[in-house]
Image (tube, rainbow, N blue to C red; front, side, top):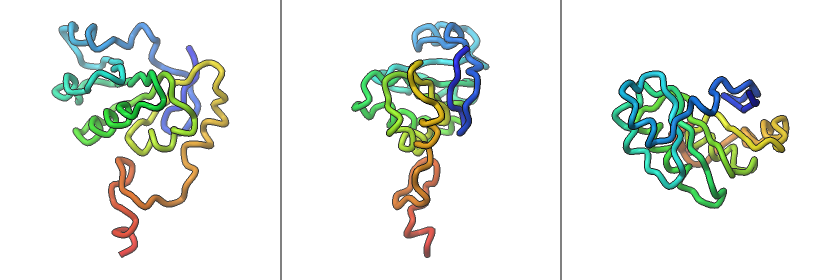
Length: 145
């Protein structure tokens, strides 16, 4: 098993890749409780909405770090109440970690050559945020009133 960043710490991944189903394979399962599913960034998360309370892991595979659909999918899943592990995988860069986290991702799976200690430093580079997000929906001007 490889290491990931999960909830701000480096840990061994508890999900073997063969246990994370593609959306098509996941939809074919008769029983979806306790499962893990991977969306490609071009697959909308709508098929998962009725099952968010029983899915343990949703991984979103970012195939192009310049494509923002993964950010939008994460935000939408969290806004619809998903409480499980939401993982970014694929071709994102460490400079995006903070923003991925603000959209709702709480775990990150990197390529083998990524320095996870360095990546951890990118999670919380700011003390304050002007705008609201999934991690803190109240904008700064309302927090200061």
